[in-house]
Length: 354
Image 1 (spheres, rainbow, N blue to C red):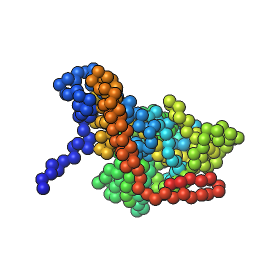
Image 2: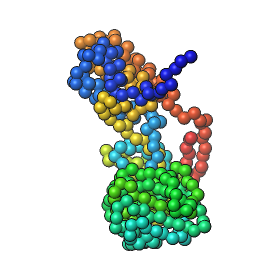
Image 3: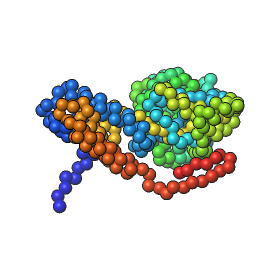
């Protein structure tokens, strides 16, 4: 048996989806002009955004971390977050007791002195700030970066056992680091090392108040509150270990933490639903897995049928709608976690299910 050995159709260009959708209503490729293409792209974009309302699309579930500030209970969420699903308060242990080094000037020890009034301000771009624990080794699982000025950094997180050969464990693409705010990063595979460092690779000059090279991650679940429950909470500024969160699903969403976190509870780790990306140009691919391609094409064909009543009669339009609904239903039924249903109770936390 001969097979292609390729899997390229798992992520076809939107051109193929648009052409196939038009063919289903009787319009072939040579008849497509820019107006028809724009019409199809709009329909695809509306479809992708509407699917968020039809259920949980597993490929849109991401994890995020939010640096918590002592005595602050409300935080802005990224604009493209549709909702938070679960959350924990994540604590970790900062590993000190070693020696700090800077490759490009500045006082490296200032980045590890627990004093945000001091900073390691380097004097040349693309430098690194490293830390050595001598004979001790630590598997760094989280890195925190607190900038001394609002700057864009492109960071690489690396470990070494000899300060000569460095291995990259994770990279953070270019992003803004607001002054005084800890930005946290998870290391996917923590590895034992005597040395650990943060390396700038995008041409910026590091100016850092504090660096956190942490181990011993511990997550404590926090439960979701309704708007009514949060409004009824008598003392929203009460400082303690957070136990609950409330998501305000505004156009610019926010999350409120209760009780208000103290210094030792400095990170909210959460899963969230991410809005799907625009379909883009004809050579871009839709941000969907292969198992939803037929559903997207069928739905696009139905919507294009509505836009072209002169060539699609009511009977064919009903057929296109039925097919679109069926294909989405089949894909959505398959798009699930295959785990047993478990229900557990805790009289101090209410009830929940997994």
